[in-house]
Length: 574
Image 1: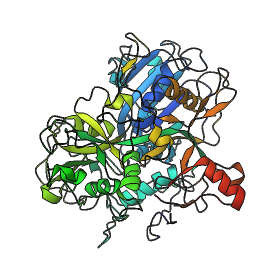
Image 2: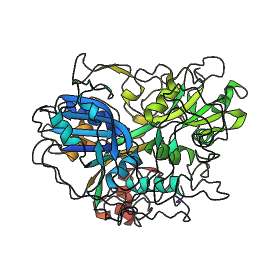
Image 3: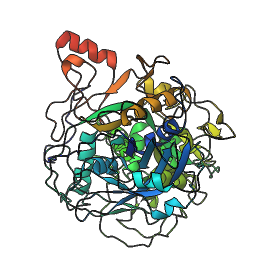
Image 4: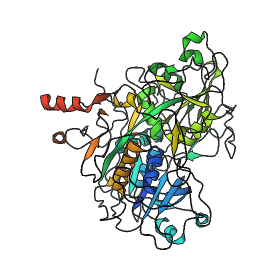
């Protein structure tokens, strides 16, 4: 294996993100924002007792879910919509209140880090939420209120976020923003810049190919002065939650010869996978040559470049160093021409017919389309749609993400199954019921053991994390931002295996932890971080730098290497 720098030095990652310092000693104790990858486990942890330590429901038993927005208070920045879950104890005099706004990883990082006059981002909840029943938007959690009570609404509406969940480290998130927003470079065949700028300010909205959904690149920083407000960003720390695989998923409705619904489509060579998503290949025969000839035309669906899922897939499958590191999901795309077809107000998942840059509809070999989905839900629904035969995409694993999706199966990559010891036709386990209501949560099919991830053999996964201020102090009693991490890890270990917990409580007193993950990705210096650390060896230094493109090693190997050489296994790129 050779050492490589992640990116050409021509792309500067200057940036300084600033944090507002805050500590919540009274309700709301948890104001979370960020990745959908941690959303289900975190919300289940809010509404139930910890399965290892016991006790009462962590945040309360009252639940409301629906739509809300995160407000970046800086001048000229639009709110970012997302899915909100609110959990509380008492509707009249609440003492325990937790909220989580699910958005893109990079958007969540920005809402947590960007600084305005009163601090970082805030939650904005529609007034109608007070009288609107919850929409049951979290798998296996049943909404049980007719609206958010006024006492709870007043606590969370306008409150600052105190924890951000993310699929990628903040250093990598900052790079993802810079890459999405920097100006297009003539002759840039490696797609170093995507052109959704202007950089350093409020950028061009990236549009869905299916409906009116958008996501907007907006400048923020991880240290120093905020690029828009000039306010200083306080220090933060990044805490490990657990490892989650990105699944390669296909539509199964075409069961004719060569269709993705046939048993012949079960495994992907990783280099073929990357080449398909870069737009160089576009037929089912490219997946399995035994089909004979090109087979069926593929419809390739990609995510938005501010998504942690997108960036994990980009650097571990499409742009991998042992394949063609000049590949990118954005090859052949361009923010202009824009608005060349009209998206429907609600998604039908019928592929557009007009070539366009934003919203995306790019054509590859055999006239195969490449389109863009905004958000995990839209990606999975697009692949599941009967209007989208022979479509292929990707998403982080989640029991709720794929539950009830009759037209979706997953593929192994290089013969390695991401969730099970043995591959059974790409079927997902199916779970029903609730943790907080009848009927009780139950599953059919094999629940995942993530053997491919824990062994280090499956190549596309990321360590989910949470970001909190260094100055954050948990309240003496009741829920806390950091305590929610432990509660979610315990849920993932015992009840809802959505990810491999980084660690979990070893006993009912949680006086010690059991390690759940023995592999890591090599870290590298990036942006404002000049010296990286893997974080495995205390004597080497605290974790720092990026790792979304890092090669996979055993933690023990890093310890052994440091003990014999005084160095860490750094700057190895997959």
